[in-house]
Length: 182
Figure (cartoon, one colour):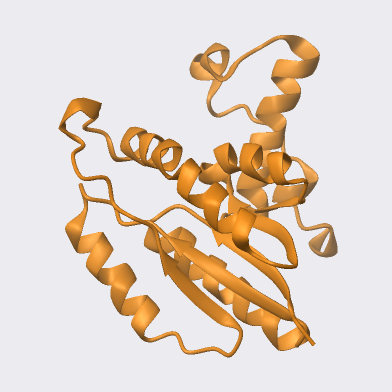
């Protein structure tokens, strides 16, 4: 029987990729009808990080987990981006057609697993009519803080920049308070 397939596209950073691979291993251990292909991007401005990622991939041997290396751009000199995060966003946009092609050729594609940095890939999943699953690589407290910022913007029309003066005055939400200890 052919397995259901999930494509995984996460930021080319060790912290994101390591956690995403651990999630993939857990998912595969719990469902033998699943196959996961991690789409790997190289970050040309970070050769040391790329080497560490290659080492991590070489050490990962799990049945049902496959790796597909996306092509690196030939020339990025005209991108005029020196910050790693800005470069990563530009690289993700560059990879969209490649991800679209791979996804469209994948039989029994069940969805696209992304991290917060790779949300631009939601467009690709929407075009193909498959769900997108967002994997949050940070802890619950940081997620709570981000949700707090979003609530301030949505309900009080205040942005993060409005809070610079009162950085120490964040309310303690459920994600940063352990009710078992109270």
